[in-house]
Image 1 (tube, rainbow, N blue to C red):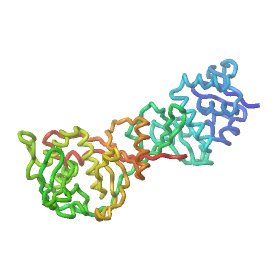
Image 2: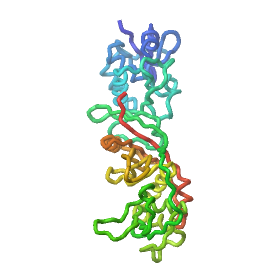
Image 3: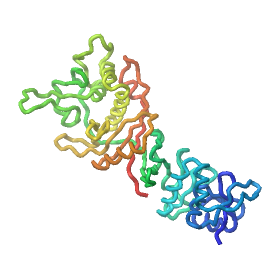
Image 4: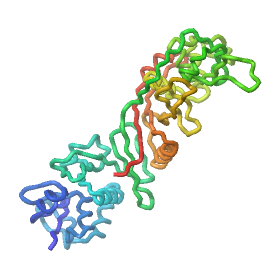
Length: 388
């Protein structure tokens, strides 16, 4: 005979030999006095679904007054879906991970997983296979989201997303923190001179190593070209070189009556003019990547802000780029579809998808790029598909 549960508040209590049967042997619930345990609604529904509980009495009170005849899985599931946030999708993920051999705990006090969750945006913690809540280490902190929900970019690192689509299929994503570190050993010369055009800077007499070894810009070439040494820089490349004291502007085309001040202010103002505040964020991330000895180049062909090369010796012997980097604001919220598209594309071209979550205070029109860019906060989050 299977035991009966009793719903008290938001927990289901089970007596008899419940502690030995469910908590000690299979990691369900949390111990109470004697052999009684408390189950979360999801845990209780899973045991009902498996036939390990004969039913659950709904309602009742803390003194143990009966709440009527026990109900089965269908009625308990519907009642819980009405009473608990995102119950249906959380049940699907809980059941899937249980079927994969994981013990799980709700990531809230006073359940065992409450002390192991990295923040409040986690639904469950899944322990190492074969480990119980008493002794196990957390393998996956699980955040459950529906296909039409959104996920905050800030604080995403360290969590496992379980996305439930409209057909109840589940896709898992692992989000990890950590910076992008490269090994490109190149120092640009300090005497570069360029002309600021509409949305780029041309260095007419660039030294060969600026492109060949530093992978800055793109040469202005052609089959019938009679011009040598001309290199086109993007605005983020030029702004970074100016801020480092490597590049000075000889001319600013289209700047008449515009921004007064140093060269950095002119390039930043032009960048904001052509792409708004997004330029500030991209420049902040570009600076961080160059500062970490990685080489960022445009990721336009891949729908990203940058692709990165970690170890460039010469462009003639260029390795494949390792990352796609997309720059997002600190308050950005991903839709699961957006996240899936980015990760799928990166995987399809054998790259790692990295999001640079960036908070840039920005400066006035005369602000030096070096000042506000280097004060920006950047959180790196790599996201990949996961099979638990």
